[in-house]
View 1 (cartoon, rainbow, N blue to C red):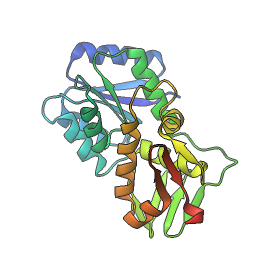
View 2: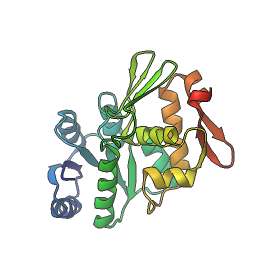
View 3: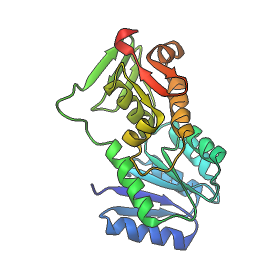
View 4: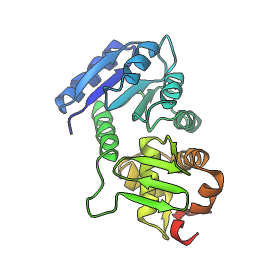
Length: 229
């Protein structure tokens, strides 16, 4: 699915390489060389996804993501030389949807981009658009979540995890199953990736709603029990 991709990267070689691979995959690419420029372009709302380096001048990648998340659900794929688990968790906590460490394979980045774009695709027509659980309303076609009629801003990945849990309602999904359904079978992240995204999601939802609907099955994974709560 061709899309407009924004790359925020101050390393000219890295930016040009990613641009070439993404264009070869059919995408249109915009380049930004610092955080402030990248944030302004992203906030304009003309792109489908942002590839964001953490270590960029002007405004760091983490802060760019944090500010973008105040007003936008635009998917964010972070690039960084910092590859420890704690670094990944910090990236997810700021609102990133996915995380790739440097050095990386450009083909892997393209695959991650395609996976993120698929998460935003329309759901199967055979499934209902909106589902309601008490004061919680989830519209799968609009990618809209509301609690007591109040809109809740969730990332593309958070919504995909929520959708996967609802689809398997009443059944426990392991972290590995959730990673496979949301990130794809070749994803090399850890179990903590799922935990962090779901922690963020629970924090955004009404705490009582979240604890009632998203149940942690210790040592196994998570289960959605909305209709039986």
